[in-house]
Length: 108
Image (cartoon, rainbow, N blue to C red; front, side, top):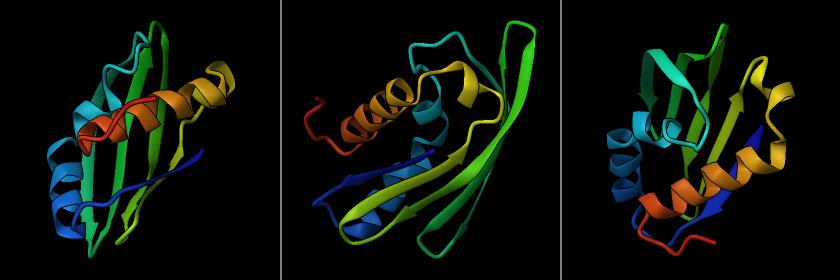
């Protein structure tokens, strides 16, 4: 799944906000998910992340990148088995709204 959200903040400020909010961005999406083993690594303005998501008895690795440019934040994530269980539009809308909230912008 790929999500891009535009922003008007300084790039460095957005990188700091993404870094501080890595776990909270992925948690609390309105779904009964538990996250374990979160890892992140920055290379310039691109963060690579991985974690394990659990819902009931189902567990799947989630991995991807968050790229911050002067104008956009792009999340490219492999949601594992959850991509087949969660409607893409719902997941995109929830994450897009979270990112906008992170940036202090209006949610849809």
